[in-house]
Image (tube, rainbow, N blue to C red; front, side):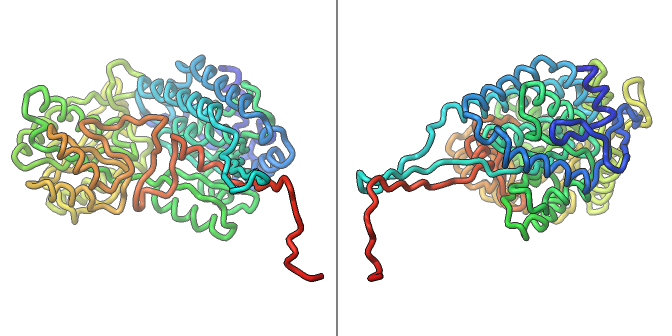
Length: 506
């Protein structure tokens, strides 16, 4: 894999089975967010490179073997890809850590989840019936509903979980028989580039998988608007998602959007009745807010806690947050890495400043940490931050920070808790902590969020659909619905004994 990575450092655009440099010759340095130093160079593609990749994907879909490849063979290839991911787990996890700033342990867990996604969609398509028979009410009519690939899929992925988010799109797209072009985030493209190499190694025909490394305003925009693209799937911010939908509208292509969230973590007092329960709820609140430095679309960034336990809960939460070990993700003992870029840290700092100006109380964090051996001064580190006494009118409560910032709101009644949790334009995920099974079901049923965890936070299942309500998006990933996004439905009606209709006298 080392030779492949070195080769791809010179040419990271893949179109029609070839590794290529950007047509313009432009390149981009990839920075390690732990020290802001470049450690890789990729091609910086633009609209012309996007055109070249789309043409290759179009040719491969219209004239290549992949759409007609038997399902069993497509499933077998996906399983080979999963095996290759396991083989390269250590190196890919390290690369994900250096690229995105997360700990090596997190990076390698991500690779496990990527392999699971490929295996899941392989198993899903392999077990499907060839079509759904529709009773037409006559023995002379054979009527069946079948699924076919959409065509050329344009996949645009975010920087926080580069390979995992790519796999949620690539695996079902390939399982359904599509070809694709993908644009990873320009700041974290390296593991997606590596995955394209693994697909070729597994035997995927040339032109089926194509990648263009480059910025969203050129490559992503061309992907979204191009008439030869049949579907665009985007994961990222709300503003960019709206632009993708607008660009795709004139050609009326299928659009799937996953646009983030502002996720409530609702803690009822009865979930903290014993010391063990209290400890668990606090620990999970830390996990909800601060894993990967809060750079998670499903992060539990809004703690909504019952008034009777609020003071004790927040005090202990802040005490533990101060002890989170920040540092370079590749260093031993580090629990949380840097933010992904200087821009992301500046954005986080601006949100904290606005919250304090609006009356929030800083319980911990709120600044850059002191440099250390594992925490270079040049890195994009920011302390885990707890903001108490927050309310719904605050910008930091309403908008997605995507940093290690937790806001605290308080409720007295169940109805008030639900009102606060639902008072957001997003609707991606949320959690309810309670020892009352009836309350758990009631509150979970009333929350307008695509995923609701009860007495837990962050787990996802490949078999379960992932998506949101409101401005969290329109698409679904994972599960059978994730596969359905990459399919068209066709009704085949066969008359086994045709007869004249005689509608007309002529």
